[in-house]
Amino acid sequence: MTLAELISQLTERDDGLTVFASEPWTAQSEATAVPNREGTSRPDAEGRTYLLETALIRDVLETWRAHHDGAIPSPQQACEAVIHYAENDTYLHPDEDLP
Image (cartoon, rainbow, N blue to C red):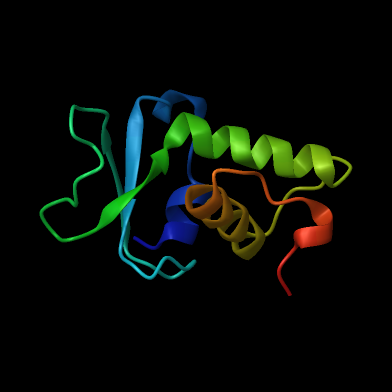
């Protein structure tokens, strides 16, 4: 499953999961979500690295929507916002949107 597919399928039921993705992180990176556990910052068995917890991903997307007048992000926009947060520990604001 790609990161874009995984993000688009997240629901509130998934808030106890952690997402791992292949680097470099892009919308097309292979990704998986596993139950939260100790040591989640270590790569998984397939070498995918820790990205974020699903609850935090949902928060990033809610913040993106708030900064875009309630618009729903495209899969690419959602991935860009999540990756930006994972790399910078800050939300992607409209004036920082990637092309």
